[in-house]
Image 1 (cartoon, rainbow, N blue to C red):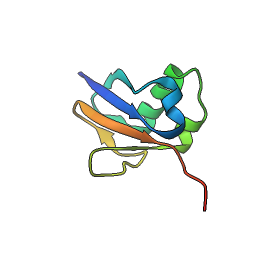
Image 2: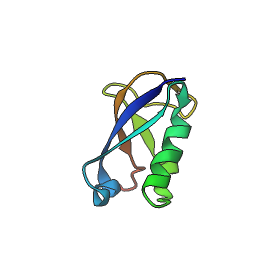
Image 3: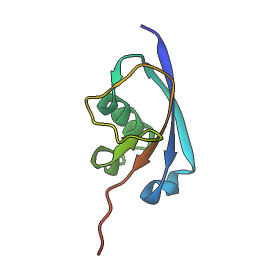
Image 4: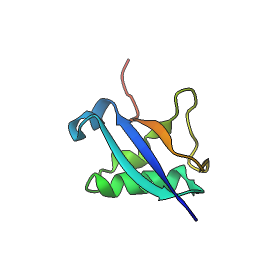
Length: 81
C-alpha cells in the first residue's frame, strides 16, 4: 500500500501550532485515522477529535477515505452567539 502526503492548514484554536502540518498516511486511510495522526503530532491535543477536516469545497466525514495527496484544513468547533 502506498503512502499519501497530507497538508493540514490550521485555523482558530489550532493557530498556536503554526500555520500547517505535513504528514503521510497509507493510501486508503480514513479521515478518522488522519485525525488520530494529527492528534499524536500535536502532543495529544484533544480538540482534534472534536474538529472536522475539510477540502477546498467539502466537509469530510470521519469514515471518508483518503486515496490521494491532499491539502486539507482542520476546523475546530465554534461556540458563540
